Image: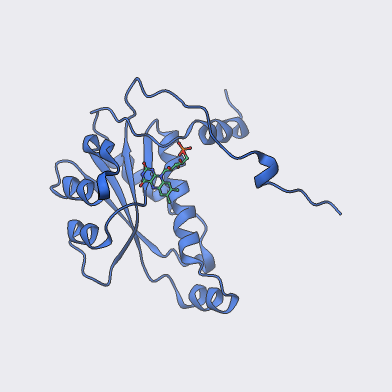
Length: 185
Ligand SMILES: Cc1cc2nc3c(=O)[nH]c(=O)nc-3n(C[C@H](O)[C@H](O)[C@H](O)COP(=O)(O)O)c2cc1C
């Protein structure tokens, strides 16, 4: 049996952006569980400035979300996706807003990013593949979701079982010398 340490290492190193999904549908309960677990993520002043929308086939919103994410010919692989988690940014709380404002650091996108990482890793632990989608038309996605002009979609996460021929790719990352420094004195 894996130790906890090995398990988290495995989950992090095996997660990759899935762009080749199988047709196998995902249980709604599983997505709810992933979202609930991910909402344990930390956020500035515990503001939790998000609302997660699980959208599944056969909802007519699925093809509309797909279309909104296929700006300028991008993200063609989404045609096969049957489940999305749409991450809406909400207000959070005053304490986080003012703390971030006075420090000159907008903390809300950081909170959303941490949440998104939790979702992708929790999905990976359930044998699911994910792809975060940041490239979409803001107005079109709002329309797809039936949101008014004041609501803000920050990220879309495509979720599904990877196709059996979707192999683990080599990680292409900058040299650690470029991305990590160590200071001990
Ligand atoms: C904020 C964000 C937005 C992204 N948007 C897209 C996207 O629109 N389409 C896409 O195919 N991948 C998208 N990705 C996935 C990245 O391309 C991918 O994470 C990166 O190339 C590293 O590859 P890996 O996830 O397989 O390790 C996005 C990732 C992040 C974090």
